[in-house]
Image (tube, rainbow, N blue to C red; front, side, top):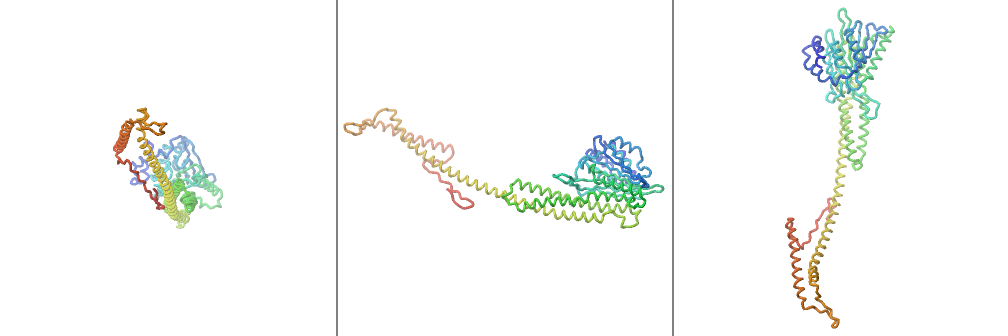
Length: 496
């Protein structure tokens, strides 16, 4: 990959100041970063539009190349500056801002070498293949280099473009522009070369350039029309670029304002208990996205303002030798573009704090909703705890009753056991005397029953003591557990 760029890098020092060219760094960037910038497929979409000397009818030609073979043949078959050429515009298209440019690395290397493109344009070229990066949104990579015989202007425009879709109706775009002016020399006429990197095939800028070319043809066919407009075309092309995109910021900011009003009104009128946690989070997330978009737009507008100022100086340098009227030397439309961009920057500066206030309000609403939910859950837990304590107390009472019944059963059980063993009658009913007669051996029953009852009670107590010792609990045989007192936080009522 590095070999295809070396001819361009070898020759570029012959056309530009070697002290300002880091050849090793340029080779590394072109070798490692052009894989996502330039297409790796066999697809080409490049338009070459020429305005020839004289501006007679038919002198404006435009050719669209779709295959590598036809473009390579066109680049190899003619010199860099064909005889009679006034302006050449080379448009390189992409299917989308995040898609690679539809030109292969070998063909671009030939194009850069043939036209001795200024190295500053490489920085603009490497910005393609991805969306406008937030860390570079304020940089236009503008470079203005003027000399005795040549002048170079290179820059990038970051902007937004409205699309016909409901979800995300605005897309971020960038367009790269390279302009090389060759001033007239002895026996030679000057010319202008433009290389424009377009974000899509149906760019409004490309349409306006073609319409401008058609207007030049109409001017040339009618000598009575203003020929000054034809001579101003190279400088006017920069105004075409800026006016095609920079006025979109107003309507993008209007879109952000409409979105902000919708969420802000909802945040102001919705009570905390009416808004779920998920809805509050979605609102905060949407407002954060609006804040990020407004900050990004503000940074881009500041970068565009610096770009307009730099282009005004650059165009003044281009026209300084040919135009004596100082009012006509600057960028066309500069007096309107500068205050427009300043107004956009001020609008963003007002919008961002209001969005942050809405984010704070939505955050407070979410916090209050969380507190209300927590209080409700705590109240339910207190009620449940009270119910469980009552249930526990009932269980303790039932356990005490069962314990008493068990103890009484233990008292009577040995007697039944003795009776069943001995199978004798200790009580007889005398029908004649009509009285109960106790047997003389009744003491045997008592002598057996009482020790067994005492032994049963001792065994029960020992079992209870051993259970308490094993569970490391205090031994309480006849003590009743105390009820736990619970005091509610809201009413202060004491429950047992």
